[in-house]
Image (cartoon, rainbow, N blue to C red; front, side):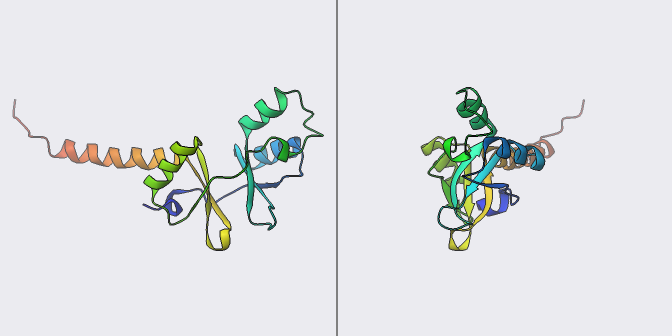
Length: 145
C-alpha cells in the first residue's frame, strides 16, 4: 500500500519566520500537533517540521520567548520525505533509519501533499490484523459440546 493512500492529506503549514506563539495558535486552531514549515525557496516546498513537543522542549524548556522566537529556531531540518507512491513498508524503514515518527509526503514537483505519521501506519496494521483475526475465528473448527 502506498503512503499516498494512508497519509493525512490535511497539512497545516507555517512560515519559518512566524513566532512560536503563532505556531502554537495554528496547531490549536487546526487541532494538530505538527506543522510543516514551508518556503525553502518555493512556497510549497518543505523547509522543516515542527511539533508541539518541539515547542515545549526547544522553546519553553529552553526559556526562549515564544513571542520573539521564530519557528525556524526550533524546527527540525532537513525534512525527511517520501514520494506519495512509496510503499508503506519502505516509509517505515526510512522512519526507523532516520529516527522520526513523521514523514512529509511529496507529490509532483516536490509539492507537499500530505503527512505520514507512525500512527497512520499503526492504524492500517491494526485494521489488517483485525481482519486476519476475524478470518481465523471464522475458520476455527467447531466441536459440539
